[in-house]
Image 1 (spheres, chains in turn purple, red):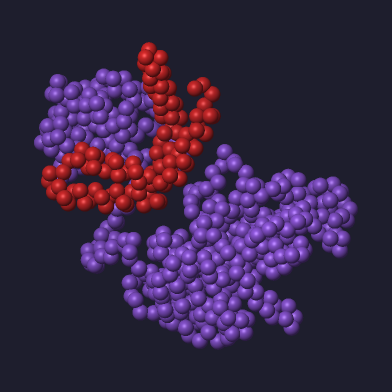
Image 2 (tube, helix red, strand yellow):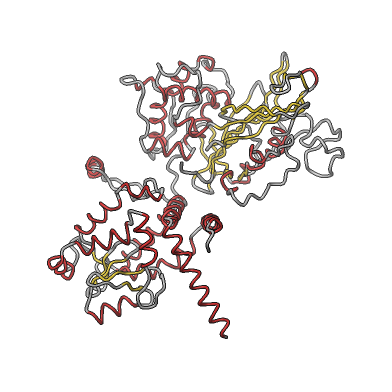
Length: 513
Length: 103
């Protein structure tokens, strides 16, 4: 297989040059203009059977199109002794004398020049997919480092334990969750971070994360000691410094905040609108929470959208999700005996409660912007924009004055989650959801709102003395339990039966903007 | 039997018209790119690439032809396309057709 074609193609090129190829390619394969497309649509049919079949080929010697499946192009080649034809789908050349496709460097250069033309934008195509080809520098690096690692379904690259440096299990769990966030991993392994603190990369938490990813995906199996990361977090988030046990959720938010700040540099934006930047943290974790306040008098709705990095869900007793539901239903729906005391036992119930319309009582009257009177109102929270990675925080720790308690009730969560019912677009115009049935929307694809679970952080113990562990997902269906430096294989059942404190979900389908 | 014949001709005509509309508006290219993206994302391309490599190794680099590869990987390729990708493409085509007034 050479890139010099075959003797027949060389003879053809010597006789007729590369113009026949170029003409056919520009008219029927690259199609730079709307007119060209019209011509193509009309004329790309087999001249023998008049069907627009697949794998249509154009003879290079004369004007004839023939299909491959019914062998019309083969017959033409034989009868007319025209042994070269172009496949109109891909622009490759077949030589019937050699009985196979042949590759010629000159023709490939011509094809490449067509596919890079900006005229493809006429069809609204941005950066059509092309396979990766190494640059000169990359070729040098590859030659100097001949060792290759093959990643297949059974490989465990990316798994590494973390030494506990003294009650740092809360940090270890978050680090495990972040290093196994697929889109974040892709960002760092593709070397996409440019340090905003030139000369001080050691102070940059994002650079430290990049170094951390290198450690995790190096293939080294011994546990990693994250002392540099710990130090950087301490210097940048003083409230977390010290060797006491901290809250994993608080650490997650602090870490995301520092990463976000360091993506912009230390002298950057002074957080007037901290979430309106385009750093990788915002692209991945920021969602939009919509709050609608409806005036009871004039039904005017005042809407605000706040950026959020996680969704904190109340557990424990409270009013039920359906205000119209007067009789408790039998069996496991989470209702306790008294209708006013409803404890959710699943993530979906928590979300339903989170997004139900809430009547703001007479003590919380708000001045309506439209009718200008102090009125009672209802408030409802829904998701306006979904983040790529959704983190759900189950509020298990209660810190009221003099009262510290952990809610250990089991809350079930699914491994696949559909956020459609909790979106702002599902919200009825008249004060919230009339029912909870997922509307069948034929115009939008409800698979846009589907998420898959990939990490679960668990806390075991009491509020005074406890330990954090986490489960993370490797490949599609393998789960591992990370207990500081000990990594063990786990089953999905084990994961779904665990208590659950922080739940990390990843969007299944990413839309390209 | 004449009805069946007529039906087949009508179907073929309909197919040709739809195809023409798809090419003219550039929708066919967009759909192809979308499909390509989805198939890369779900790992289909890598799976088939690996399979092709195996076939080439089996048959020997100097003796294998494109037709050999096509014959071997077509059934596997067709079977491995995930259902949600099929659904998404069908949905897009349906939407496109509903927006065309003269079909």
